[in-house]
Length: 289
Image 1: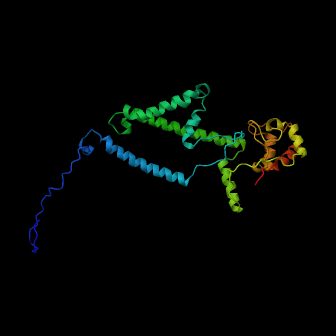
Image 2: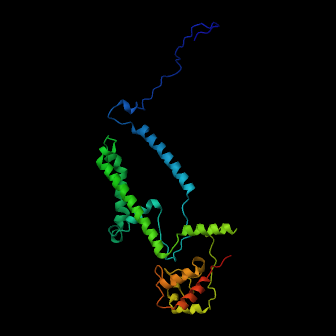
Image 3: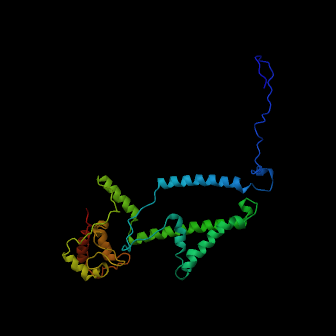
C-alpha cells in the first residue's frame, strides 16, 4: 500500500504471500450442491446430533433437579404390603413382563429375548434402512415400526400405572414417598427435626404386653403369622410400632375386613373384641431416641 500525506493519493491493496490459501480437503462442500445425495455423516451430521444431544441432556438434568426422584422408606423385606414399582421409563417393560407368554417358564424370552431383538434392531436400523428418502410417509416400513413401538410403549405404561393405582385403592395404601413428604411437612410445621430413616432403628418392644388384648391376639392366631412377640416373621410384618403407621379406625377396618394377605376377623371376633384389640394395637408406638 502506498503511503503519503495527500488525501487523494491512490491506495492499492496487494496480496500477502505469508497468508496461506485456505484448503480443507476433509470437509466436503454443502450437500445441497449434490442433488439426491446427503451430507457427510462425519463430521457434519454427527456434530449436529451431538449438539442436539447436549441440549436434551441439559434439559433432562434441569428436570431431574427441579423434580427429584421420589424416595420411599429403606427396604424392608418383612413388609409384605409393599408394591414394587420401577421408574416411569421402565413401566412399559414392567407391564410387559406380567403377561404369561414372557414370564414364568418364558421369563428368559421376556427379559433377554424380546428386549434384545428390540434394542438390537434399533442399533442396526442405520445399516438396514439405507434409503435416501427422508419424508416419513415415503418410508412405510420404518415409519410403521416406529409408530407401533410408540403406541405399545404408551399403552403398556398407562396400563401399568392404572394397575398400580388400583392396587393402592384395594389395599388402602398411600405411596411411601407421599407419606414421607407428609411426615416431613408435619415435622417442619411443628418445629421438629426432619425424620431421618437412615438411622438404625431403636429396638422396640410391645406396649402393655400383659394387656388382655394380647390374649385376643393369641385367640385369633395373630401370633402364628406375626410371631409370639408380634415383631413379624417371614412375609408377615411386625405389629410393634403399628400405631405409628395406622390409626385406630384404620386398624379396626384392617382387623374386620382384612388387607393384603391378612384374613378378615369379622366372623371370628366380636365387635367388642375387635375394638379392644385395635385400641391396644394403636398404642404400639416405635421407641424413639
